[in-house]
Length: 162
Image 1 (cartoon, rainbow, N blue to C red):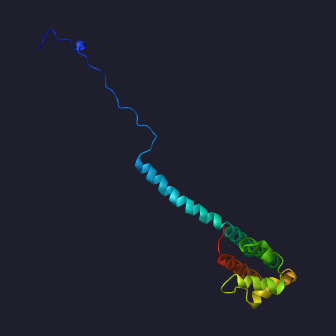
Image 2 (image 1 turned 135 degrees about the vertical axis):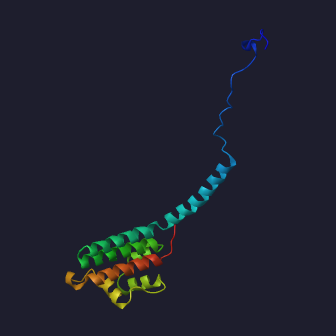
Image 3 (image 1 turned 30 degrees about the horizontal axis):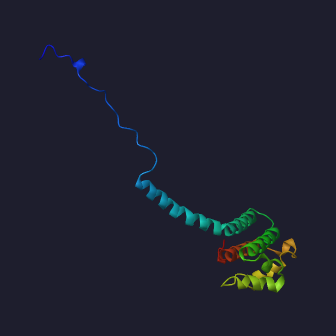
């Protein structure tokens, strides 16, 4: 070795790390991921928005059915199902004025016109029309449960709208 060699005299620099990668603009893969997520989220959000009225009506009818299974008064549950069906018909049917004032046979005809297979046959139709006026003992739990199922079937048959 060279005795006059001094390593401190060499023009060396310390280790340099590369610059930190900037966060913007993201790489191409992130753009594809964002586009795919938007492509999924927008139709899903539109679907959820269009079916919000259906979910609300089904939720109310299912709560009535649970109350009925829990021992609630069948006549009161049937009356509540009739009220929910009327509200659903006003919100799902397009114009609220079509269903709001209908009573009796015109109400049943309206319900039958909005579904392919009528779920309110003679027995359920009569029960639906008479439930506000029947004595509490005049309705069994089975009749009230069947009326709730018929109301859910009617709600499910309605088209979704914004």
